[in-house]
Length: 389
Image (cartoon, rainbow, N blue to C red; front, side, top):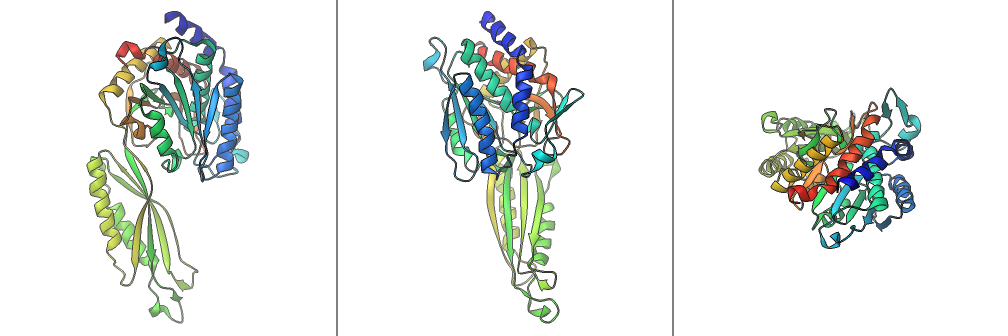
């Protein structure tokens, strides 16, 4: 085992420039969650790389978002009957189509910049090279599966069934979301619900027939204040109205209005309680004659610690130390697909290369973390049995 670790980590140590080249190709392809052609173009680059290393890839067609890709590396030796090890990541980003041309991949002072460079195209690159290393040299104690999905940033509405099926029976799930700026990995996450609140009123000319109108925007304004008031920082419950639109014209009483709402929570009971209160806000009207509908558009489950997850972190911490890293476990308010897998199999998140300021024009990746984090991932795979996984 020690010899196999040395062989694989030595090979990975020589791949930094190749990693950076693949990262550039991925970042310079727009892949907004609603840009299916772009997400699938990122997938084509990944498939091309994996095929070049003799790795088979299965495509699970998705109608509205990027196809899910499942790469397979059979177990070495007699490990074929063991539960598989799942490496996971998403190809979609939050940035609009055209952003890659406006802000192409750049490297400066040891950092890489570009849309999705840390969240999470660097993690995809890492997974590709870890899979390639084991395909080349063997040594892994169980089949490896690389899952590359296309709709995580909007709650994985199509990807979730594929993710949960891929996690079933797994010995371990390693989600390569970006490592924290602190160098830590993620051992806990909030759950999240993405909601749409639509309000219906009645149109009228704002000058000639004002009194005949019923303003959906006025009603939505009352509801927004009530929604924001549900935030309870001490309990880790936050409500954010992030998008608002509505109305027909400036001289028309607004016949409709809509708000997009982000709910974050720590525990399932808090979700249930808050949803009851949100539905109550939707049902009550301050402006007579309006009606409202609250719809869940996407959802993440919280990543909660389990005994298996604790064992997996123990294995990763020891593996990372051998790569010169000293990560701790960190809780974050951000959501991820790891919440879906944590209730199915031991899961660790945020093991990807280190980056920060995700979802902003200042998003960055530490280039010197590409190789050590890939080595830590590979060592973890080789050391699962040492912690009873």
